[in-house]
Image 1 (cartoon, rainbow, N blue to C red):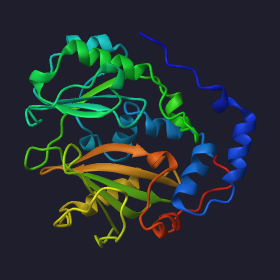
Image 2: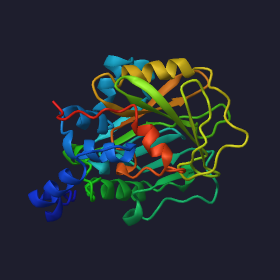
Image 3: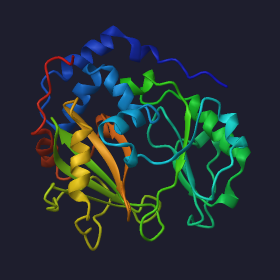
Length: 299
């Protein structure tokens, strides 16, 4: 197995870090405050949040094990993927980053194929017959050779995680497709905004709501759903779970899935979009930042 690359000199430079600390010292907007947190909040808690394997114990202890997706395997060596006996539907992803997953299910488009291993840090939905175990191993090996989130603002927590591969159940909505992704923005233990992403693998939409399910006239890039999403049946339960999982930090985004028979945990995100979340109109950047009072020092 290849070793993860070292952090580049620029990201280890005290001078560069000092300049970034100076530039972010008076954050006002949401993106300002995310960058402030990225540079200053180095508590072990954030590593637990970011680690897709370790966070499971955190969620089980604070929310309940019934909110977790079933895990088929957590692997240190991607070669072991070839030995697993898996169902027709499952998800493979790295534990030390975001934005990469291979989703396998019979509902995938017939023409969908696995990415080339060198371009494997993407979402891809494919059918079981389109999966070559050799290619899947190569993709996962590529994941473990990448040091995620070490760009200009340095997503510190991801660099502290031991890279592994996790294989989970594939979640499905009432129509058998990939379910909508509900993202709860929780500040100081209280949910203030909800993002709903639908159609991740085709016809993607994105909408923002208040906790009372009032649609916000803003965009993060993708189009709004038409017609708008109905208020989810288990919204209060999802908000309650999101707030339980956030009590130890000033801000975290809690991602959940609303299935026909249960709520399922997705992930905890301390650095949405790496501090570059788009807001249209820009005034919502300040609105999202308003409930968040960043501490002078993280302890």
